[in-house]
Image (cartoon, rainbow, N blue to C red; front, side, top):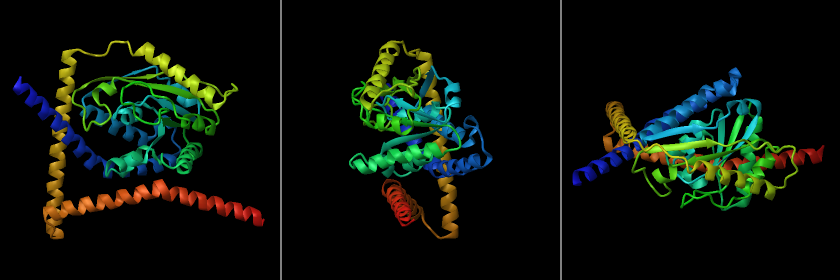
Length: 351
């Protein structure tokens, strides 16, 4: 029993180190590649399902899920719905640290997602989040939160391809795994999108594997994501409160229907997930260590930097870049937007 506990703790530690190594490798390279490919996709006028940048995003998300030892079962996705509409609102249940990657991995088109601003102060993770389409929201400032919502809607409307706006109607992660009361942000976004189609999106099993407050999942397993039947409400005269009640009722009905379905508890499957997770994490750690050694040797020869000096330079540079991106996306974008709006209003008055 003691040997088994030691093995489990070593496995969890390897998973944590592997995930950190992946962010160190993928965040600077992957985020730059995604942004470059997105501009390329826009220039070539590709269809939503053929965006190379989105395929790279989904590949990174799947890699992180595989490293966590997570098997994902997808139910009910209707790809034709994403083709037929320029903008779609994806309302997902939120109870786990895995949810953002599950949305990215399973949504077939480009998505924008609202997230609390504190997440965008985490180096490397925040770079990838911004490249994935994350929009930081200052939940302590109602005006900035509203502007972040409107900015995401404007980005969706100005895009040449179909865009999915993902939002957790609860406004935060559940600490119990149960669906919390809905905030009004989801109703505001629905109206700002011109009463676009709404897809209730359930994530089942993630809370048990990777709950709020965990640094890494302690066990591997299966997560089921369920795309419920879409709500097409453009022709119905619903106010915001009625819309929220209808959406919440649909998600609760979906939970009562699908939450009782048996998960994948096959011991052989669990062993395969653990082995795959351990192998991937070991390879990533070795790759990260090899690259660090190569870069350190080049810098020591070219600039005379020691290993400690190189680590200090990387840490300092990443912190500065993270703060700059955070300030711009949380405060700077709103300042530029308000300045441009004021200028346009003044010019209209002069004319």
